[in-house]
Image (tube, rainbow, N blue to C red):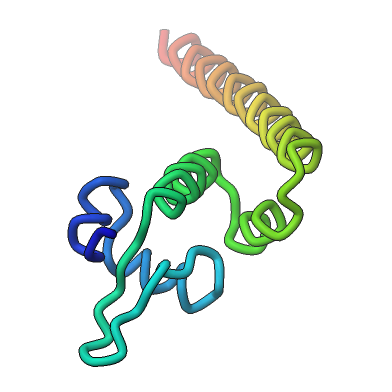
Length: 114
């Protein structure tokens, strides 16, 4: 069992994030000491925490993460990841178009000044 501070260090999730995840029932401690309310996590919690950290980095919202954790099916996770990937690709394309438009605008300004 790992204290919340050790678990936070191991997983890269802040203590505040771990407390919030417990509050929304996303990742609950394996044990809470009734005498001092210290939270303890186990090895199973570790793998879930790593998954949740990845999902956050991939842009998943809390409700989407809850859906993944409740469903526990790889098909659901795979579908959500593919959807996120497609959204990111579209954002990249939109940003590249914006960069091109900025370049064109800057170039047209240069031509007018000549």
